[in-house]
Length: 428
Image (cartoon, rainbow, N blue to C red; front, side, top):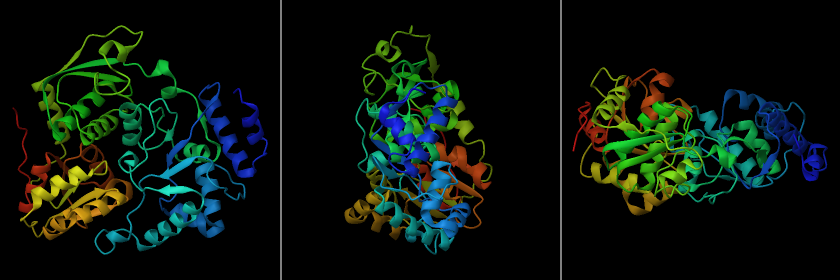
């Protein structure tokens, strides 16, 4: 790799051994990718505070400095971790104290996480504790190079915000936070951001549910490529684009999509494809919509629902408002729990707006910082769950060995109230 004088100095130890270890990791990473250079980043979203047995062992051996060196820098050296060089936030992590006594999550992990938050906060890490940092203030600008983890956050940053990031890992984001550098390859390069597939939507896509279905179809179609989506689309809201991207990143590996006239790098179809010819469109019509719905519900066999999950990626305040409206004056079935996952900052907004009171009066709960997939925790005895998240319907059956139903928010609330799944695919 071609390093600048400043980068060579960091690698040679001019800014201390931890920064040198970080630069060594980035050089090895870049060389493995056959990458020629590093690019400057000023925004990192990674994971440091997420508790685990391995992390607990490392902390017992040498404190949080030791844990960061091993896990976030791939180094066995005894390092003292300095202040973060660039703005760095913690993404989602484990459940916090608000879940105590309700979520089957180890108390020692909650304590470990609290200790981690105190340590990393002193090092300059902002504890946003959400997979949707863009909902709570972390909004990189168009064209800005960033280093983000988490598939749904990455696809939102690239597509909706027009920032530039690959789907990074724990080690690469750790190294980027201390150096302000990341290998300049993949989505950082303009030639790798043009569309590859054209999808023509021939059924109305108007709401959160249908944006999720469409995203799941698109991800299966293009895998890790870059779809351009046109057709019968309503102007999407924030949560629609969040849901679409998360679904596409789950069924495929989409890190960047274009919706001409909506996303910033695609004012037109031709602009979305740049110098490439516009390919023949793949249709998304009633048959494809039906097939996608059936695929997402293929792991549901029993209609008795133990658990209902909303908020993956973490719910927006508008989603919380809609949930409170649907639950107002109702009561959950005695054998069914309902969790709504939100960023901690938006939980405070929900509390002040009265939404939390309405939701809890119905017997449901708002939880922060994590999700069942991240922390591998669901209500004890859960066999069947229902969700409005295509991402959770895709992942949670494999992670927890439970059945899944996917539907609208209203389908999910009805399942929580009655204890039975009665959702069906509705057509305009």
